[in-house]
Length: 430
Image: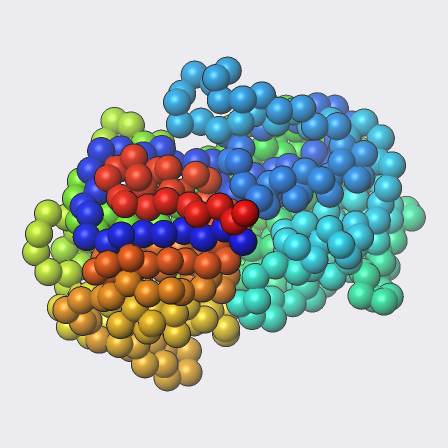
């Protein structure tokens, strides 16, 4: 199994490119199931989760061709995918594929909307909480789907097609919003989603659906109105930049010190997180090509924050902020309100010398003068990169094991950081 080795104490300078958003690229790829025509997606990141989903889509009959970066006008744009689901050859998404990545469960809505049936394994992914799919199923049932659970599979049928409905989510769910949004594009009549997730990735998918011929109103709000249509057309769409990767590298620069431009980043996608970072004493400014993050000397100020759905502080940046605050000049408090089991990185940070106490859904982080390199283990996607940030601050060498979690969501991480001066390398297992 590959490992990542980091020697801390090096400041970061220069620039690095922000990749396309994983959390938009995956549902956009799944949206290809909604049309028999070609869907071209630009700025797709090269990630393990993308590879896994491509395999699942091919199993359903999607033809996928890939262009490299050289054909793109910008050096920080990713690959271009051409996806054509002319014929759906299989409406089953088997366990051995879906159990590796939770987002693959989202094929349920498009398959059901286009084919009138689907059989999809219950999902897998990071073990950061229960994250049930009941809201997905509630929304599809409201649109006329007949659903039962059989041997770990969701079996859904809509022989007469889906019909528009009013779907009121009792709590905000990104996955359920994606599921109902995509299914509604091919449903008869109007679907209204209330208490919809407002994440930018939802808006990115909706904008692509509009290009394909759907009518979607309310982008950026908690109420979406979708007018279904008989068929969707092909389209060309560019994936927005990854705000979680942007925030992660911003915290990395804050941790190591230095001055780095995050090329391709959009400050508007991450206002709350950047505001929190600025309160710690780090400077964040917009540039012509992205966002510049600067920390040259000076202590990090402690902070108190809680995770919230967008536009609040992202749960996907909680672990990274915690790693940064381990060396703040004082005590920080982080409350996790989204996932009940997203503090698995705490015990690994403690191996580096962090002083963190857990009280239910709240972490109390007392800043220490120094961290010490150690052997640590990645427990999930976002937690793993918090160990990278801590390793950049630690004295001596830190070795991170089980980095396959990192490969699911961060493209060329060690190359991007080493290009800015970090002493980081991947140790490939023999």
